[in-house]
Length: 177
Image (cartoon, rainbow, N blue to C red; front, side, top):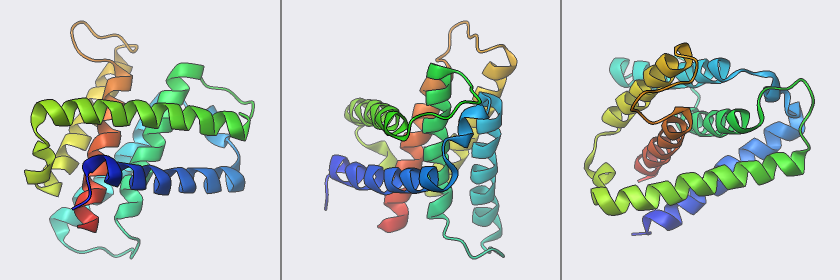
């Protein structure tokens, strides 16, 4: 069995490749999106996953792994937007990839720390529970956004996006197992 870090690296490569190809097709048009819009894009992806899980059927025959990759990439975009702010100006592709790599590395480092403390509990979780956790994180993010980005005692927006990245990576592991 491959180690979690090795599997994570494979997922990073796959997600980054898609991010780079879409950036070639669309540029960095996503830079205009506010964090609320990115949160809603993530919600759409997570809701589709949950609906398919509950109905056990899908009418659009797109691989569900694409939805998790979308959650990952939109989450990285949201973290970049939190760092840079929204803009109508294009972001240099190389700079966008550098920021992508930086934030995916931070997500991986967080995953390593949490896996140490939680004993890789995700391995024994149902994928449907991970989907529910992603949806819960989205609801938390929406509440924080509605509070102007402020929290009293809780983690901020970025922490929730990082968690959704890692939950989605775990779900991809489970789909490929």
